[in-house]
Length: 187
Length: 302
Image (cartoon, rainbow over the protein chains, first blue to last red):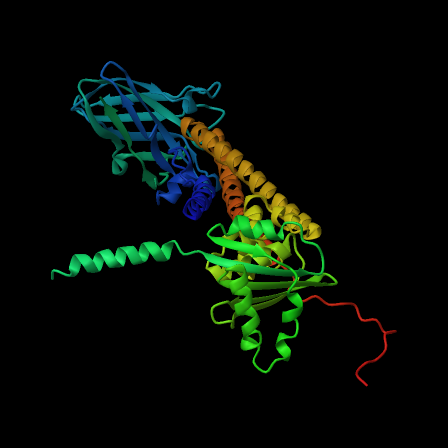
């Protein structure tokens, strides 16, 4: 009886202690500049969203390209050049669409074009050409890349940061301080 | 070797003969109060012995202690009585009552030698059928046949052995009750104030644990919900909003978790302390009984 009483007390104590589990503080959205800074990636940052996705071979894989600024150090920009590499072993490029950030601005039609080397490298060029508003500011959606899976596999879509470039309306270069790739898993 | 069967036959017959020998007693009862079942009780309880009763000779033995040698003071008379009544022993029993006590004076004489061979004097507080019981024990002692029920009957007038006393309420009982429900053990010990204090304290602490845990649970669920929303959006404003909310929830769930554990620890410690307290203040027999000092009473110390 004494033994059972002791066990009961231990079980109750464990129940109280373990039922109050402290969850890990896990903020890791690529569009969140704080999360990027916590990982040592400075802003402005080129990122993909979502950071990871799992699809089947019959699905389309959509990867969004984003520019992320720190709220305290915003810079105006007018044009970007993104060089993106994707795993061609199981993905093929379907299409590339301009992002909301550079298309939903009223009366501002951007110049948006891309080149594909037919292997695994995509170069996207976007210029903001409005006459009233010379440039853009803040975090935003630059482009959507649509891929078709050709087989199963697991790899990353990534930026070639040294080939990427961001300029303001005076053609001054805005230094890109970091980038984050995105994992694509096709099952 | 040829004499061995004869030896065993002699031994067997000797044993048979001795077993058939009965103790025969002339019982001389002198009681200052009438005891209705005294004679019949001896006959019923000692069926192996034969009793003759005669109460006319008691005067002879009242001065026995005045003789230089009480054991041989009435040898001639005893022998004569033995021959007259054809008995082995003469048993003289005298019972006197003084207030709530009685004194049994028993003398056993052997008629063959005429001497006093056994004597018993008991001075006891009266108890139920005590005189008959003591008479049975005295005679039973002389014939080697004392029944347990007579001994137990006598024990009824004695104080119990402290180790054998079973108290209705014990400190352990109080401790166990308080371990089940704080304050119950104190209430069981008639300590109503401390029972209320313990019950109130433990109830408050338990309520605090419950409230803290419910707040923790709500904060944890809200954190997980906001974290999911945070991960599922690519809108920078929503990301910032959900992150702020999730961080606030995370801080809350840590704070309430710490509070719940602290309160649970205090509740558990208090619970055990309450049980120990119940044991300490638990019901115990009084070892010292004091009478209140009466200053008007005369000083007897000189």
